[in-house]
Length: 150
Image (cartoon, rainbow, N blue to C red; front, side):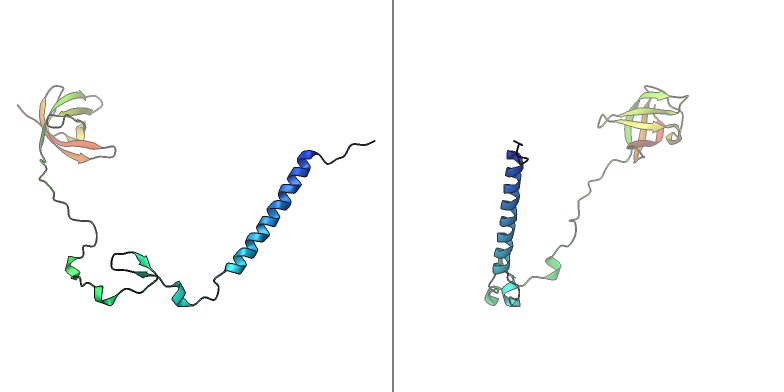
């Protein structure tokens, strides 16, 4: 006697496949019966009431409010720019004369700011007190117009 070629797993997969096809057909029939094709435009329109909520009824004209165009702000609100101190004081923490770069510790914020030899007005070395301005470089803030102070 030969063994059956249909295993339990094959039978279960076939049952699941048939069940899935049946469910798919039922859902398609349900969508077809409940479709709103051909409904009027009035059924599809939504209104916004005086509180900004979406509703199916038109808004009441007696609750209409008037606004001045000047009161409507479009865009980003203006920010109050506090005067930023352009010239800062600092101390040179590291400077490599052969490579032409170093770092300055800002005395106000204690940040370490990169300085390049091209941004120097006169030669500096480590532990010198300097005044400088900050500009954004390729990799972050860079000290420019660096002057040695006494």
